[in-house]
Length: 403
Image 1 (tube, rainbow, N blue to C red):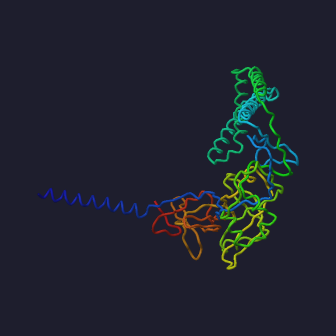
Image 2: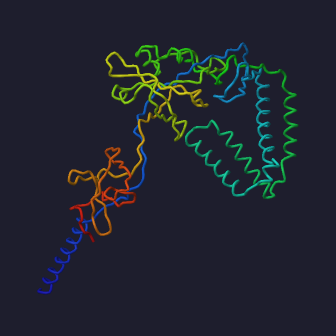
C-alpha cells in the first residue's frame, strides 16, 4: 500500500514537471518571419470604356469575308484590308490556301542556310524554352493575339534542331508538294474575290460593336455627367453589332473613361501621368494622362477620362474593360502587421539576433490590415533585409536573452 502511494506521488510529480516544461516552452516560444523585399501598388480597380475616333468601312459586297490584317495594323488610305468571296466553296478553298501558305513559310524559314550555318545548340534550346513559356502564358491569361506567331516560331526552331541532329535533311520535297497543292486549289476557285480597301489612314479593326458613332473622342467630354455615366457603364444601345465589315481608327489618341466617387477623383489631377494595368497586357502597365474629371451636380461622383497615344491590337478593339489604376508603387521590406510594436514613441519590431531580442525601428511607406512595407535602410537601428522578425511571442523587451 505504501509503495502504491509513493508511485502515485511520483506520477503526479512527473506530470507536473512535464506540464511546467510545456508551459515554459509555449510561454517563451517565438515565431519569426524573415524580412524580405516586396513591391506593392496602391491602386484602384475600375470598370470603364474605351473611346476612339472611328470611321466605319461600308461595302456593297456581301459574302464570305477574309481579313488580310490583324486588328490594330496601321494602314494608309486605299490599302487593301479584306477580300469578299461570293460563295462558301471558294471561301473554304482560300482558307486551305492560307493554311498551306503558312506551312510553306515555316518550312522555308526552318531550313534557312544562314540560320543553320550559325546554329548554336544552347541558344536554340533557350529560344525553344522561351517560346514554350510564351505560349503557356498566353493560354493562362487568354491573351492569344500573338499565339499563331509564337507557335510558328516554335516550329521553326524545333525543325532546325531536327536538321542539326540529322533527323531531317531538309523540307524541299514537302515545300514542292505544298506548292502543287496551292496551285491546284487556286484553279478550283470559280469567282475572283472582291477587294476591300481602307477609305482612311489609321488603324484597322475587323468588325464593329455598334457604338462607333456614340463614342467619339471629338465630343466625348462635351457631354453631361449623366450622359457620360450612361456611356461608361454600358447603359446605352448602339447599332447592330458587326453590321459593317470593319472600321478605321483615324486618330492615334484614345480615351479610357470610368466612374468613381469624389474621394477617388480627388486623388487625381488633370495633366498628371499615371499607370494603368489592363488584364490583356499581363503584368505590363500603360502610361496614361488624366485628361478630364467631370463631376455630377452634387460633386459626390465623377467620371475620369484618361488619354493615351499607344495603340495595340487589344486596345484597338476593346470596348468595356476592367483595369487597375495605379496611384503609386512602393518597394521595401514586407513585415507582418502583428509584429509591430511601439517603444518610446517609435514604431518598430523585435527581431531575434542570435540568443537576444532586439528592437528595430520601422520607416513605414505603406500598410494594410495584414502587413506593412518599410523602407530599406543601411542604418542598423532600422529593420534590414533578412532580419528575423518576431511575429509572435510573450514578454518581449529590448535586450532580452533567450535560450
